[in-house]
Image (cartoon, rainbow, N blue to C red; front, top):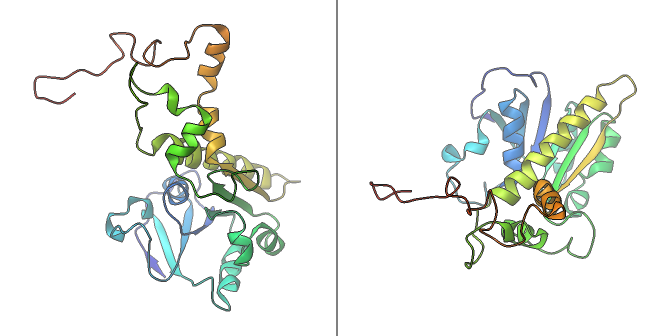
Length: 245
């Protein structure tokens, strides 16, 4: 078992997390739990990360330990379930049905550890018309209408990297749900549960205030026409003398 360093103890000291390695929002969610003091064990797959970043520069690995397990081999699922038995939280970001096929889905994990908080994240949700489709951050925020709110009037929407969908609508909502479920699991009558976060749901929810303003008539449904989207001189970006903005 390798380690990428342990940070200072925090409010989640003593909380044990198993992270099934993935890319993007799943590792970021587990990183946040580690930053808060949780002991995170990342279950890495043979061959390393699929994002092609040298592990030393992958900041989502910080404050985590790592163990290598091939879930597609005999005994792989059993090794993960052994970790689950001693854990408080599991994080996975597989496509719908993958964790179940690998033998580490919610039923198998909660049978081994009834107080486990099983946190999972997908783009479109576990079921529904788009559940089995591949997707990217920009597609999720486009479908919700959130993308249409960002940018200048008369121009295409501005692409906000993958911050609004993957990380704000995905990672942060998953962490909020996991923390709430962990609190419940630790009450006298509490039990474990599945926290199912869909990026498309989180991205839609982020625009709650604006939808309320639209309904009240205090926000116009076009870019660059409102208090916080560039119509006011104090809420814009301007070139500075050094050629930056």
